[in-house]
Image (cartoon, rainbow, N blue to C red; front, side, top):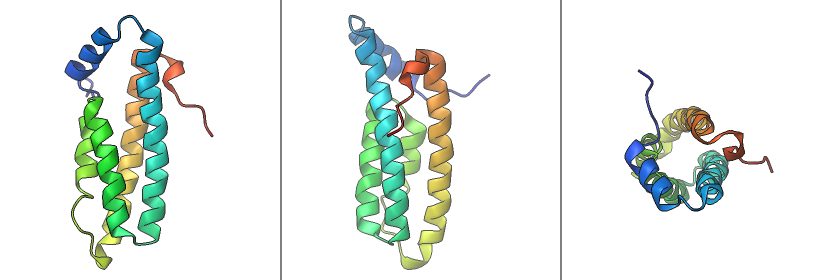
Length: 124
């Protein structure tokens, strides 16, 4: 049994609501992936700069968009950043960012299986 990262109930509901616009449906997830990868890069920069408050804000943003589209594992990982980060905790924050990067790759692969290669965002 393969683990599903995108919640079927949310995915199916969105797909049903957008049945008349399948390209728009795919676009929702493509835009999510694009923004998630941009946010990941911003989180890395904020971690480098030890900008804890901004890191918490960006992680909350990614958590929210992940929940809307049913990508709960990403939301759960992002919630770990919502607590204040002390100076000595930035090393563990780096590990969580690496975990987030790997998780986003898995989410992208799952969405590509469901929606095809058009869901992959164009690299900027």
